[in-house]
Image (cartoon, rainbow, N blue to C red; front, side, top):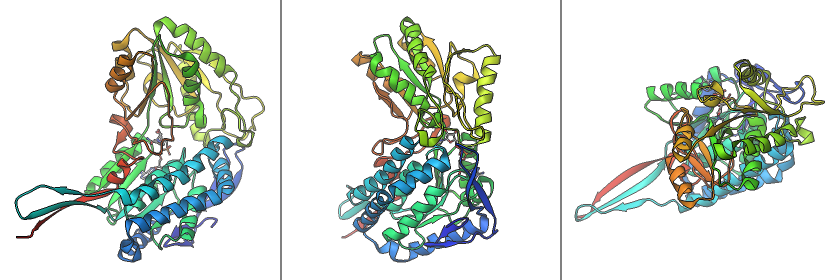
Length: 477
Ligand code: NAD
């Protein structure tokens, strides 16, 4: 498996013969290697997927595909400890996060396995003596570009839905997080997925990723990652008139009104930003608080931030390392620039005793961040929370919508009318009222407004996204 690609149900050496080192973010040590996949490998994977579509895969009923997905979920749980260990060491996840990710990975396959034979078409009333039906079909070969922050969850939600609808898939995991995805491909073959339905080509974005999104044999692309690369994906897929779903970043607000239940809100707000060391697209990274309780909320959140502990994954503390040196430098630069431009650090967690080779950043709470500041507008993708006061409901909505992103929002208030008004007025794909869900939510459609992307994954809507309708008009006169 080491340094190989998984194509047509088998391990193969990559065409270049080259590999990429796998680094444990907690220590900076090399712990393995993956294939440095190239365009030639992507081409082989697309051909294998095309062959699968012409073979037994296409003849399976929805129920039979569902059974395979369910069996894969069982194989994942049967290999749970191994997958948790891989995910934790490869991605720098503290153990509790890695455990929850692998359970959710299995849950996606279980959910889509159970759902797929309940997806019905429609009968459309039309002229006399005509039967019109709307049926759903697979696109064909679907490409899946996966980021490093939640590789297994994102694999489950995107590949799970695509396979459920009968597509054959080619996955390009992130260069920093491929180990568990490669293992899942092997488990899929063991579960009985026909050859070529689940191909994985690890490698860099500019080579393997670019080859996948521009391959003329790919009929649909699901991309999760940065807005910058999302733009490239949209441009490339447009050249072949191929649909893409883009799940991009976020700058999600936690909106706390003066009547909020702070006992419930404060722990959820802190967890919503430090989970996975802040490397969560739906992290609640802006804390917007009504001015009457701003000082109190800030003091209570600061108290928790000051006590946050960061360490190696196996210690399972509040935060682990960031994914790599580049990401650590990026997050640290955000913090340093904010301090230099006069933003106030209200509290910072400790970094005592972390290995010097690891990629750690102290969780940091900034207070009174000016509304036009970069910290108020741009995704940091680290454990950094920016607090700002607001005046009233109208100001809260304006401030919540004052970024180019729109992925998730949290609204904290006991006022029933305001809960609905604010939830409906915020431009984001999900709004949580008196709770917050960063990640997770297998059943809940998820996706962005604006710079957070378009299309929906998770829940039953993903099955619509990953299939195409055909209208069949039958004159039976
Ligand atoms: P990234 O865009 O750099 O990389 C994501 C994936 O795209 C990787 O597999 C990478 O190899 C690949 N890639 C890079 N260049 C490519 C190219 N030219 N063609 C094709 N593929 C290419 O993002 P990242 O650093 O891995 O992840 C961080 C970003 O992802 C953040 O902005 C975060 O918010 C976002 N994200 C969004 C969601 C969501 O569901 N909305 C989930 C997780 C992460």
